[in-house]
Image (tube, rainbow over all chains, first blue to last red):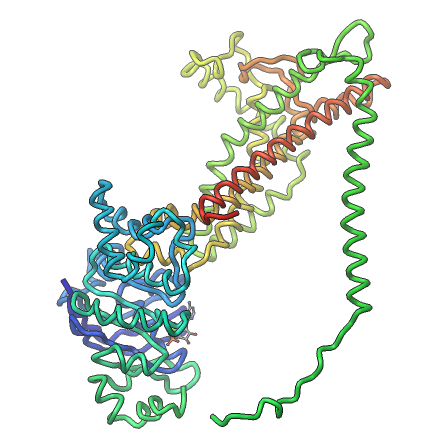
Length: 258
Length: 323
Ligand SMILES: Nc1ncnc2c1ncn2[C@@H]1O[C@H](COP(=O)(O)OP(=O)(O)O)[C@@H](O)[C@H]1O
Ligand SMILES: [Mg+2]
C-alpha cells in the first residue's frame, strides 16, 4: 500500500520568488522521513509539491519531477485530484470542516471517492478513527460537530480523514506545532503506528520530535534572505543528529541558529 | 539562552486613563440610546399618523384591493399593494440570486485573481448606481425588449397561470418590474456574497482540495457550508432593497390595483411605488392611509428579517452544536 517517492530537481516559485531550488530527495516506503530546517527555508513549499497542492496557490508554479513508484505525478494526463486522493495531507493548523459532524468529516474523502452505502462508510469511519486513536474518545458522539473537539483531537480527526481514503503516502506539515505536549506525544505515537502501512513525510520545527519519530532526516536551509531553499544534507536520522557531514547541519541541530 | 531574574525586567505600571474611559463610555451609551430613541420615535410617529386610517378602514384594510382613501364612499386596503410588493420582490430574487451567487463564486473561486479583482470592482460600482437610473433604463430600454420574452413565455408555458397573459398584452407588468428589480439587486447580492466567500479560510478550502476534491467539490464541501449565514444575509439585503424599491417600480409599472398571478399582464402596484406616486396628490386621509401602508411594508421587512435570522441561527446551532 505504501509507495516510494522520488523528487528530482524540484524548483518552485511563488510568482517571481523562487522558494526552493533543485530539491532532490528519495523517500522510502514504510519509513518516516522528517524535513527540518529554519523557518522560511521552503519545507512547506516542498512538501506541497509532493501532492500537487503547491499549484493551488495563485501564481505558484514548479519545475522538476516527482515520481510515485516511478510514475511522474506531474506527467501528461495525470490529474491533480487523483494524485491528492492517493497522497494524503495533514496541515499545521487542524482544519476539520467546521460545519460537519465528526462522522461526516471522516467520510468526506470517501464520498468524494464515490463510496456509497451507509454500512461501507460507517465501517471505514470506524476503522480510520481507530487507526487515528480517536475512536474511544468520539464513538458515542459521531454526530457532534468536529469543531467541538480539542485541538489534539481535531488533528487526529484530520489524520483519520486523510487515511480514510487509504492513500499511499501521508504528508504532515508541522502537525503538532499548534498542540500541547500531551497531544503532541499522542500524535507521535500515532505516526510510529502508521509507519507500518504508509510512507510518511513530516515537516517539523521540533528537533526532538524529528529524532523521536523519523528514520531519515533531510535538512533544508537557505543561503540568505530572499534566496531559495535547498537540501543541505539528508541521511539516517541517527547520523544527522549525531555526526552530520555538513557544518551547517551541525550548527542547526545544536541550536546555534534557526 | 541565559535566564534572567524576573524582577530585573522593568515593569511599567499600566497607565490608567479613567477620564478617557468615562468619556468613551458616556459617548457610546449616548449614541446607543439615541438610536433606540430615534427608532421608537419614528415608530410612534408612524403609528400615530396611521391609526386614523386603520380605524376608518377597519378589518377591510387587510382585504380591500382598491385605494380611494380620500373618497368617503369608497374603500382602501393593502391587499393588492402587499401582493404586488411581495410577488415582484420574490420574482426578482428568484431571477437574481442564482446569477449573483454564481458570479460571486466565479470571481472568488475560479477566475484568475487579477480578473476577479477588476470585475469585482465593476460589480461594486453597479451596486452603487442610483435606482432612478435603473428605472429609466428599465422603461426605455428593457421594457420594450421584454415584450418578446414575455410573449415567448406565454406561448410555451402559458398553460401555467403565472406565465399566461389572457389578453396577450405584455409590457409594464409585475414581471418587467421584477426583472428591473433583479438587475438592481444582483450587484448588491453579488458584491456581499463575494466578500462572504472571500472570508472562507484558505485552510478549509485546502482541506477539501487535499482530499482530492475538484474545484466545485471544494466549493460544496468547504465554501458553501461556511458561508451559509453570510449568503442568507446577502439575500436578505437584496430582498430588503427589492421590497423597498420605489422609483424604479413607479417608472416601470403601469399601476393598477389587482391581486392577480398573471404577472406578464400589465398592471400591479407595490407599497413603496404607491406611496411615491400618490403622496403629492393625497389629502389628509390619503396621507394617513399611505403611512398606514408604509407601516405594513415595515412589518413585512421585519418578519422577513426575523425569519432570516432564525434560519441563520438554526444553521449555526446545527453546525456548532451551540449558538
Ligand atoms: N503563499 C505564498 N505566497 C508567496 N510566498 C510564499 C507563500 N508561501 C510561502 N512563501 C515564501 O516561500 C518561502 C518558503 O516558505 P515555506 O515553504 O512556507 O517555508 P517553511 O515551511 O520552511 O517555513 C518563504 O520565503 C515564504 O515567504
Ligand atoms: Mg512551513
